Each structure stands twice: as structure tokens, then as C-alpha cells.
Length: 300
Image (cartoon, rainbow, N blue to C red):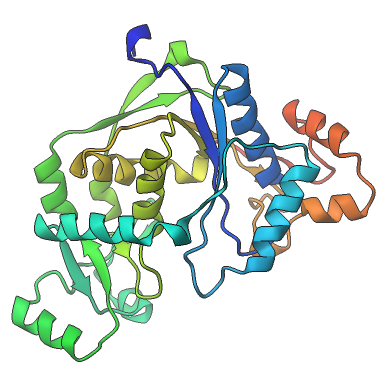
């Protein structure tokens, strides 16, 4: 990437889901994103991904804000809530439907798991395409009857329409002079869901649209989301959205070698606060990759 191609004003973001309190790994990632923007005279934004109606809780939003402020993390502008952007997601879905790239899927998770033909991709079992071949009349009748359904992208058609794609990766720690082009391979993910049965948009669609709307130029997130970047690059191409630079950082793991996760009760920032941890010291330790006892960097 040439100097002239780089954005003049850097924008980074941190985008947690309000499904629990933040753990140390979240705090580290947020600090990295904030520091990256501050070092380049850019902006750091906060987005709350709150459209999972079954797990998102208002009290977790308040907890996230409290945890971030305690750690010394400050964001620019108002917090962006995905729940306020539903019209944008619907408009994007309608555009993709008009292109003939989406189809309704009535399969349950059990149906997919039971399919002996479902291969595995980078994100788990790849959808076998059961509903892809249903005719329009059958689809319409099931939708009219109120059958729950998601909307999947016909990945083969979408890739054929978009043509060869690539995204640009920066190393970790970031260095704009070392950006490399990475070929995007979204076919490996199969026909992913873009609108869930229980949510107006999937992570892949909402995240991609939000980053574009917020003017995000550099996306810093965990290595576990590297495969998702191929999908997001495809959506950007189909919807004429800009493609940011991507930095994928290593994940933090616990004593058992498993990555930190809310569902596992990983060491929370609120727990450390309750123990009397000095937040300024913790932030300094995290910036220098000195993690609380029992936590370490996982292998890439």
C-alpha cells in the first residue's frame, strides 16, 4: 500500500456484545485499539453490538462502560448502538436479495449437525446447502405459513459476481509500512447466515455495515476472527463499501490453554477492580504484555 493510499485520519473501534462483563482480554484489545488511534492522531470509537435479543442485557451495557472507564479507556463521539441501525441492515439485505444472492433457510442447528455431508470450514460445520435448491413457490409458502427462517448468502454466486478479492493486513504490532495483500477466500465458509432467525442481522453483515458507516479505517481484533475477514471483504465488494486495514492480534489464554471467554467465567475487569487492583498499573502491564497470573498469549 502506497503512502497516498493511506487514510488521512485513522479511526479504530472496540465493539463488544452486552452478553456479560468484560474480561482481561477485552480490556487488552480495547487498549490496543485506542492506543493505535491516539498514536496517529486519530479517533477511537465504541460500538455496542446489542441486537442479540436472547442474550443482550441493558445491565451489561452499563457494566461494559464502567469497566472501560475504570481501565482508563476513553472513546470519541457517542456510543454507537446496533439496535439503532436496524433500517440500514434491512436495506442491505434487500439489496442483496435484489441481486439474487440470498435465500431463506428453514433448517435448524440439529438439521445441519445431522447432515453427514456437512464439511468443516474455518468457522465450523459448513452449511450443506439444503435449502438452496428449494423453488420459489415452496419458499414463499413456508414463509407465508410463518415458518422460522434465516437468510443465507449463496456464496458461490456471490463470489462469482464479486470476482477475485483481497484485503490488506498489518502485522501485530501494527506498522503501516508493512501492509500485505491477503487473497480473500470466502468460499471456505459456505453459505453463511446474514440475517438470523432470532436477530435482524448476523455478525458478518452488521459488523461490516457498521464499520463502513462509522468510517473505521483500521480494524484491530482477535486472530480468531481472521477467517471472518474473508466474508466481510466479500460483503464490502457486493455493497460498494470501503475495505479497512486489518490487524489480528493474538488471543489471551487461561491456565488450561483455552482462550478467555465470558461463558467460562474468565478473569473479569470487575473482579480485578473488586480485588483492589490499580487500574493504571493494570493498563500499563497490559500495554507491555504483562498479564495477570494464569493468563498468557496464545500461539498464533
